[in-house]
Length: 376
Image (cartoon, rainbow, N blue to C red):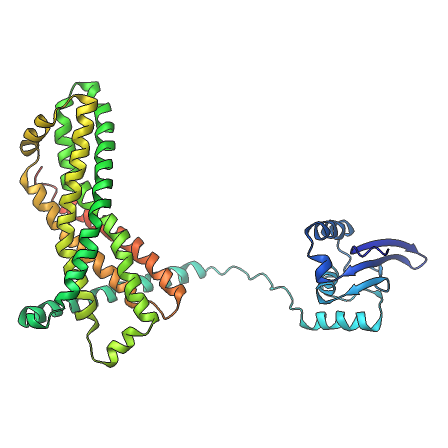
């Protein structure tokens, strides 16, 4: 039985070396992993034969298709060997491959202006996003004025639905994460305070850190990942299904029906979720403090009002309102910029979550600098 394994044999002739190609050089024979690995190793062992006076003989090939011809053509350096013995049908296949094989792209010389062009492109893209966000804020203010003047035209059903889906359904996950964060934070703080005998100060540290910073920021990050992405996906799907175009045709204002209900809902919900998350975190910290440092819950509850000023809670609530509005605006901004294809929808949702979390952290840092003397 004839061996159909694709292979190359070397023969020494009076005219020089002759590479005899044997076997079945077809897609069925070459795509088997063991055969392809062995043939690749053999071709590497032959070295680069392009431009060499060695001859090639294809007359003993059992079968040859375009894949096998492409392998040979690539090994020849995309040029004809000096001596080639082939049947007319084999030569025709090789000529077809040579005709439609594109030369590999030449390496482009690095241009010193490319980093500056890339930087300028990203800066312009950032400015374009900022311009769109400012436009959304202005439109939101105009829509709120319109709602105050004519409350009967307001999308109250949409607002109540967003209040439920963004607020009520987020209570379990925010409570769980807040509780665990409080436990972890209390255990870490207790390890340090025990060294100095300052066990009672755990109430001060937990109260300030959770009420003033960690509670609102943690709730905002959770809502940004949970509801911010949902807002972008909802509006993005409306772009893919051409519902936004239909709204424009019917004269329905997108800002009044899509952006404003979500922004108002998040502005109302975020302070409540922030307080809810903070309470859960304080409960977790109180439990961990009782277990690790024998700080009783009654002492913790009685000492908390004296350790934390009410201004901290007011500041945290104010921050949460700003966080909620910004998360809604960022989600709507990226949702409205989605192109009518699924790839753009995925990219927009990812960018929305990342941008929302980044904006929350930046705004929190700004609040920390501006109100550093409040409640401390």
